[in-house]
Amino acid sequence: MTHTLSRRLLLAVTLPLAACSMPTPPPPPPAAAAPPPPVLASLAAFATVKFLDPGTRRAVLETTGGAVVDMTAAPEVRNFGTLRQGARVVVEYDANGAVRIAQASRITRAEAAGRMRATVREVAIGGGRLVLDRPNGVTQEVLVQNAAMMAFATRLRAGDEVAVTLTQPDAPATTQN
Image (cartoon, rainbow, N blue to C red; front, side, top):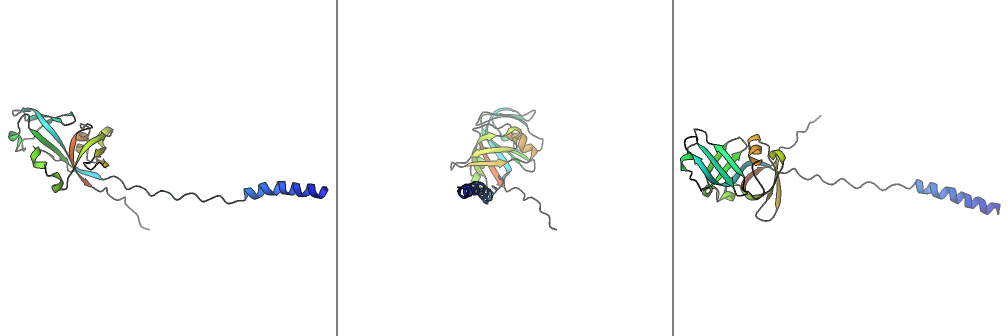
């Protein structure tokens, strides 16, 4: 009986210790980081001219989503006189800060010029990120890095029609030892 009791005691002590020494499974490998979203090289929004003042060169535009854009054309803008109240136009900002306004018919073949047509789904606070719905049903997140383009993007609303040109973000700098 003493012998049986010793075996039971030995088993009672050894089994929990054996369980403690079992190796833990390795952690799962980290998921591959998603590539960063593309960056806007240009942002063009479709709008209708609501008001024109040739004396002050002021134009008030309404985007398809209902946002109001109030602009004053610089003296070097040559085509201001061709704009008409009620006309459908496109306002484009590029990464260099240049702003263009033209008849919407000039951008109807947007895809041929490397542009992508889309509808704004969401504008992040501050305009640093847009979520766009492409015509093929794919949702695309894009980054806005230019300050003038960000200010313009904050005026956009869900439902606005846009045409954008995308670039890939700069790769992070690497150091070699």
